[in-house]
Length: 500
Image 1 (cartoon, rainbow, N blue to C red):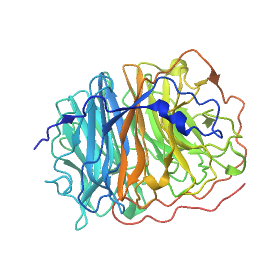
Image 2: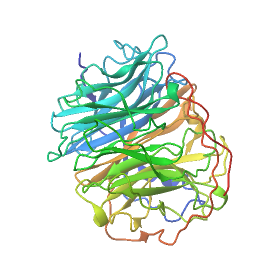
Image 3: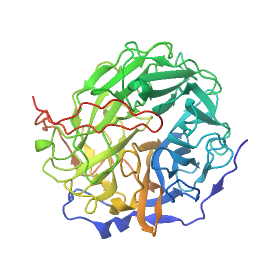
């Protein structure tokens, strides 16, 4: 069964200049607002319980050629997952979007097998000409496959019913998918899915497909059966798969043989994080991307450059092989003395660029004032870019006005816009997809999916640098225990603020 698509009526665009109406004088004066517009790409039409309607959260977006495909949760269910998984596809650089909901997946969308679904991630397999969306199926009554994948062979406009990845299990979490689309790679056409098993303490597992996602190989652990969460596999041009992931620190593991075996993780860095205020769902999960030459970037929220771990910067590390990683570097969005708290980053890199001329773009959420409460925190989305591989950065661009936390749906891990977001480059232009909320109408939410039009990666203009910044301490707030989207609760992670 396939589901037809439909488009938003023309003109459903919000001008990002309205952000100035909510401008906070405590925020960095470096924030700029060029001619950027916000386009709504999807909203929640469902009313069936137990979903919190109208909400859409946790988007991923991927580009191939002139096509952008995004996927996201629709109708967030507080204990775990969503009423449906939405998709949105654009073939004109994000100006117009077709959208709909994955078929055969959830009962809330009709005809599906599962009570809910979560954690959508998008991939494109160039060899087989297929788009893939991987999700976690959730059932209230039975075991389910660890992950399922819906396929589209017509450019992301109609989708087949889901294919199982991995055996039926009680619990799985934080899946991600990637395909090898480099025609010269020895593993061209391989697709890789990562997830973890909370029932085994978040054991990391991988599965490989060689036929466009129709069938999947066995669930394979890392060489040392390591534990971790939030892995985001990437493929280098030579076919090596690098998987940045949160373990006891920020780590990565690799496969050089097309997914037959996987190495033990190596440490990228320790994790030092400030607990984001207001009960928002967030944490130091990695966001990762690869440039045109194969350099892997990993970005996460981190407090090591802030006195007393008082707020989070966005930081990154890079690697050419997934084994040797650069020192942690701060992205200079604002001064280290500012009150701004930055979190939930989504990185993208223009695949036509690399090395010292790589165009890097990051969409992220922030609080202008880190020390706030659920009633006083103000949430917004911003964007920053570099035209020279991170040597310097352009001034950040604020994309939304201030959102109140009471406008967000609840989840088992806090108030939710998502555990991750993403940025993708389409013909050299960066596109982020992110959740934007407005005030509720009675008990009905107003949180939908948006993208920004008009963003660029300027090669001239004021530049920001963190060249002289050095870590100040070894402090960290507790890393929140991640209650899985489905199944058992994993063992508590090490907490307690610490110093060396």
